[in-house]
Image 1 (cartoon, rainbow, N blue to C red):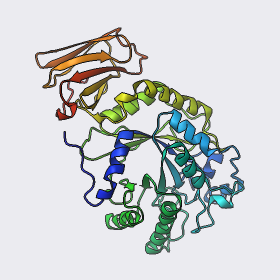
Image 2 (image 1 turned 90 degrees about the horizontal axis):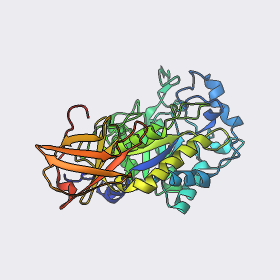
Image 3 (image 1 turned 90 degrees about the vertical axis):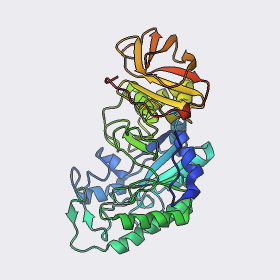
Image 4 (image 1 turned 45 degrees about the horizontal axis):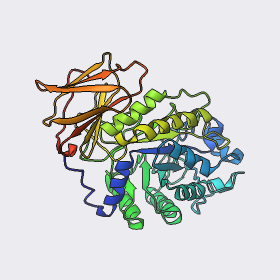
Length: 411
C-alpha cells in the first residue's frame, strides 16, 4: 500500500498532514450562548428558539467556571492529540475578540477571549489547536440565507461583501491565534466550488501548511463523514466527526455513548484509515459535563494500555466489518475483535507467514493459516461486554506491503 500523497495544490502541508493522520484522535468542541437553552447550536435559531431570543442569549452568557487548562487536560487525559474549537457556528456568534462584528464574546458579561485562552492552553500543554469556522452565517445581513436552518432567503444580500467579511475573520484567527493545525470549515450553502477554492487559497496564503477540510465548497485536504464511521479509504485522508452524546451543543440529560461504543468507534475509524474527532458540548457554566469527562478518562485509560494499536498506524490490511477491524504499523498487524459469539474468528488469509502472535488484552490467542483462511482462537473467549480483544500478529516483513482484503460472510 502506497501512503496517500498530499494534495498537489498544497505540498507545504505534507508533514502536518502526516502528523495528523498518525495522531488519529482529537477533541471537537461546540459551545456558545445557546448552551443556556440546551438546544442545538445554530440549527435551533428560529426553530426551537425565536431568532430575537437566540441572538440575545449572549447578554446573559457568563460561564464563570470556564477553565481552558482544564479542557485541555481533559483532552490529553482522553488520549486526544489535537483540539478543534467552534469559533463561529452558523448563528454568527464569534467566540473571540473579533474586530469584524460586535456580535462576539467580548460583549457578553463574560468578556473573555475564549479562543485566545484555549490556544494558549493547548500550546502550554502540547496539544495541537485548530478552529472550526462556519462558512454560513445566518446572522449576517449580507449572507443570502437565514434561519431557521438557512431555509429563508433574504430579499437583499451581498455574497461578495460577505465573503470579504468571512476572509477577514479567517485572517484574524490565523494571524492572531495561529499557527493552526486546521481550519475546519462547515456548511458552505451558497459557496460554489470556485468560491470555496478561493477561500481555501486565501487561507493557505496566510498559513501554507494549514490543513483544510472538505466543507468550504472545495475538496480541501480530507473528507469529513458526520455522525458515522467512514468507509475504508487509504488514498485520501478522512476524519469522522461524532458526538459523545446525541447533540453537538450541551443538552441536559442527553443520551451518552457507552465506553464500548466510544472505543469501538475509535477502532473502526483507525481500521478504516481515518481519524475520530469526538465532540463534547460544555455546559453554560463553562465546564465539560462531569460524566462526559469520566467517559473520556476511561477512553484515555484504554489508550494508555493499547494505544500502540491506534496511534501511528494505518488501516488494514483487512477492511473493517461489523465484528473485526485491523490496523498496522511496521511488521505488526493489530486485529481488533469487536464482536464474536464464539472463541474462534476466521478471516481470509494473508499472503505472508505469521512469525508470532500475542493477545494484548490478556489470555492467549492461537493462530493458524490453512486453506486460504486465517483462524484466531481466543482463550478465554470474548464476552458480550468486552470492549475489544486485540491480537498482535508479527510478520517477517513490513505489514504495509499487504494489499487490502475484504472480509466476507458478515464477520
